Length: 475
Ligand code: ATP
Ligand code: MN
Figure 1: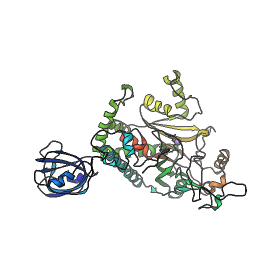
Figure 2: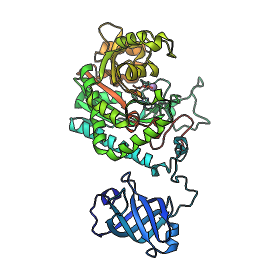
Figure 3: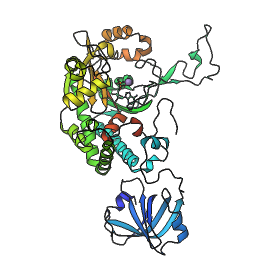
Figure 4: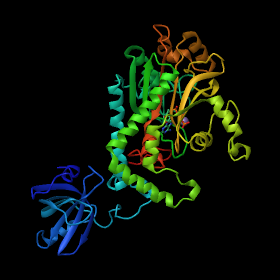
């Protein structure tokens, strides 16, 4: 039985077997207390070996990090902190761990644990994070399934570089030493595996739209890749993205969906991950003790999550946001690193000012200048802005980017050429605007940014099991 279930049992001396990893061992020959964790819950179960019950040789092998199976009677615990414990009668040691086991019970830095990503799952912090990550992923599927969406698997290998020119990882099976060349000396991709140049996808959106224009409501949830060299606490080279796409939705519907969806999954975590969140809340408090007063959060982790679930997100246009920023104190006092004027791509410092200082709640910014947004976004009547929306979160900045899509064939074709994309490359995408085009909208939520927010962690490398970032692909 999993420890999570065992801890809920009422003790009546029933015989049980606990399998898991030893977190700590204390006590002497007379009584030994062994704390075991199997990852099913943040809580350990305690096994008590009274003198003589277990032979000394075996007991010696039971040390922090060892994997064991302990059989004995489930009894009421005399100690505080747990209702039940196991009175050990038999111990099988599956795998020993000596004192070089790195996850000894003491404080480790996040950097150290990142270098030990193969073992960091065995700490309370990472156990909590990955149980919550799972719960959030499940909640994503549940939300969309319950609301009539279909899960669409869009390809990982793609030949369209429509979105992230220059930021894609190439996929090839050429011998890199001597790729075939054309007469003019350039690489001859017609001889490559797919007969053309291919890359790892940066988004499933374009294909997602094709699905939505038949199934009406679809979502994708898969890995995406970006070869951007941004070594920040919010960017990964490989991350998971959730992308709903809905026919007949306009920008307002899209905003309502984003808000309802994010609130739902956070609520799901609050209701189903209470123990792990309580642990992470304490962890965050500890971490923030080392920070100067003005950098500490005003709300605790749980307060922050409840606040987001219970309050409507602020909605305003990009133009209104620029006006607020221009009038802001940090702008007047030249505290912003980057200039503020209509037309700029908002920097993280601007987004965080709006969310954390001005509105003090999640913000949805809409109607951005068309020149800083992708070619497929629907143009507004003014000819200057597009129906884009970014959802900004405290501590994170952009968590969602989306838009109503251009559904007018001529306008989309013109815009494609304007930004320098060869229409031939995405002929299939353009063609959906020729046959039964429909208003539609969608967005992309970076899954790790959501996990970052819910767990209160500060570095995106700590909320994905094995982070891929510039110069780092260990494990
Ligand atoms: P940013 O400005 O933060 O780099 P973006 O504008 O490039 O984001 P989009 O292309 O709109 O982001 O992607 C949709 C969502 O995917 C973002 O809102 C964010 O949550 C997430 N995202 C984007 N790039 C990354 C990345 N490198 N690592 C993790 N998540 C990302
Ligand atoms: Mn980016």
